[in-house]
Length: 198
Image (tube, rainbow, N blue to C red; front, side, top):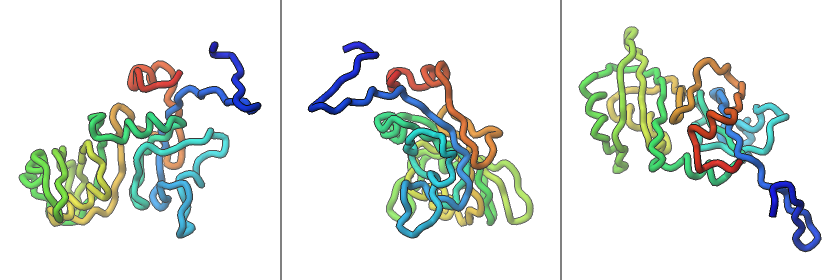
C-alpha cells in the first residue's frame, strides 16, 4: 500500500491517517476542559476557532485554571503525553494568600502526602511577596486532580490564581488568552520523535 492509495473496505473508503498535529492553546479561566458539559458550562471546544480540525486535549485544566493546554488530533499521542512516565515537567505560576514558608516549599522536593494521597517530588520557589499574597512557581510531573491546590492547601496557603506556563518543552510565553498556535514540522519532530504519525 502506497501513501496516496485509496483503500476500500466493504465498499466504504477508509480515510487516510492524518499526520500528527499539535497546538498550544491559552485556556481562559471559566471554561471546562471537556467535550460536553452536563451542567451547560462553556467548554474549551466552545471557545476554540471553528477552522481547527477535530482535536482532543492532552490532560486537563480545572475550570478556574488558566494557561497552556496542549491539543492534538492524535489520540495515541495524547495518552502518552499524559503519563507521568513521559517525565515532562508541568510548570505553573501560582498566586497564593497566606504566609509562605520557604523551608516548607523546599521540603516539597521529597514529595508530600495529603489526605492519604502521595504527591511525588515537586519543585517550588517563591517569586515575590506583597503583604499576605505571594507568587510562586511550581513544577510537577504527575498532574493529579487539583494537585497544586491540595499541596499548597496542606501548607496553609489558599490558591487565588493558577496559570500553567509550560508543559514539557512547550511554553505559554506571550500567547494571548483564547489564542491557538500550531507547533510546526521540525519542532514537533525534534520534541516528539517516534511518537509522530507523519
